[in-house]
Image (tube, rainbow, N blue to C red):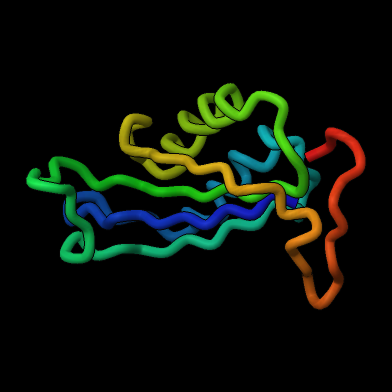
Length: 125
């Protein structure tokens, strides 16, 4: 049940193609061990006028991704390092401009269609 919230700072020279959210779901779902139909992506575009870096000119259009999984991850660093190039390829961005954040486990804090997702008792995602 991976959930991905994606914010893409728009690049005026390279618009995101239609189907980018689907491309992300298709690229990251298998890498997360998710069955078809069980990885959800919500993609939001951010105007370059609504993004800034402290005392710096913005040289590229970054991407921010928050990843929510049902349970804890054994090696978060390995997971995020493995997902970054996959997300970058699906988005057509350089990996150094893709920033992933792993959220606390969603089990016990998430519902789908009113059905609560209980916390995991094991090390499953």
